[in-house]
Image (tube, rainbow, N blue to C red; front, side, top):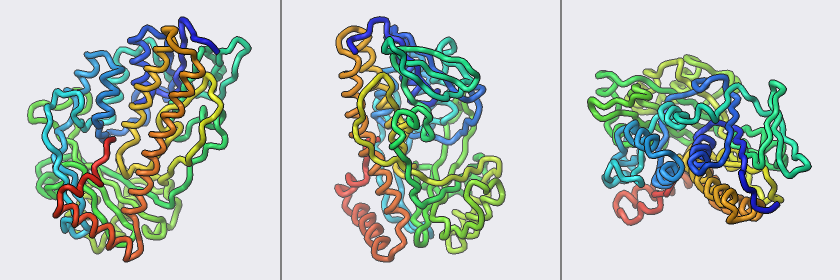
Length: 417
């Protein structure tokens, strides 16, 4: 397939990566349509925060109109000042300070509400994004184009189809049926509560510095973080200020009597609290305060490595291929990196500078390399934080304490996300 003039692109999925890519293609004058299975822009939205790294920021800036990027910067929460590792009795293991940066600098790390980012990414794409379009399958046409079929019986045809439809990607299921996600054996329960005066007073101070990780009794782990906005400058997209937390372990460690997906609201909180008798009272209060309506329960899965496939005019982006555990915070940033890389690839094809298949093949090989490196790092971190053997736990805590005493060792725990 040679270079394609007047290139037309379909994106399946209006998540972070898919919308970022769409903006980049629109800005380059490439025809793009995005199809999203949700009925409306607000379906299934959760307000939990994302931390957009320097890589994620550069990707957004490369793809978004300046006005959208400026709104993203303005909607960001108060920046992190440290990452803290503690045990379940709040004994310090490691504190990694985060040097202050210019809030306006593109490479600054920015915490942002998932709701706010989604709304900002949708702005300016009303003519591009179609909702209530559940993808069913694709077929390649004789003219080297590809047609997508949707559950409502409609179809759409373009030169390129991009699967950006998340961890349960139907595009991946047809394109790469051999690509599987494995059950890691870990389950997670999360919740959040609004910040008021009492909640601020009762929440451990380090949670307001940034991501805070607690190594619990064997096999148990807890994470907490806060979303706050500069005083007098709440986000116009999501004004809620809150603390979010997640608790994870193996089903037997959590003494689950029912499948994790059957837990809801107060029953999910009860499962976590039953595990926390030995935990510090202030950490138990985080769980007790959680709004039952915010509770989320899920099995933690991770993508298995895939080898490069025969390149065609259907490709993948983000969690649709390299879905990873949440224990390194790299998923959204890796999807944004994909979006910026694929945008550059498609723009060069549309300009006649490269032929489609060689260009797409190069994108896919690079994406597999860095995407699955992130998958492996995230999985390794999950295993380290949920270790059950005394030897493994002692080694991890010793490593944290040594890095706390000798700051040069902290580079081991710093990752460009």
